[in-house]
Length: 113
Image 1 (cartoon, rainbow, N blue to C red):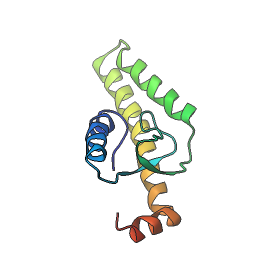
Image 2: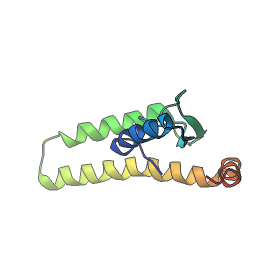
Image 3: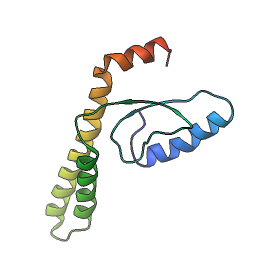
């Protein structure tokens, strides 16, 4: 499951290259993400998630801000840990919504994805 960030950015180049060589490329992604966006060059299968773009961006911005705060090592460590947990929860929620989406799962099975 490609995720936002460096994994997707690296994967995007590979997918573009495969498509240029004549391969059919289908990307399954949540409707809300930081970097995975609809593209005319790729077939996109998007699925809904229970959070908004604003919520995701806000949490990510808060996490970035936390990493530069000052304080004791333990305090900073705990804040970063909690921030990573909240961001990871978005990914877990996204994966849960994917496997619960019966219409999309049916499409993937029928197309031998």
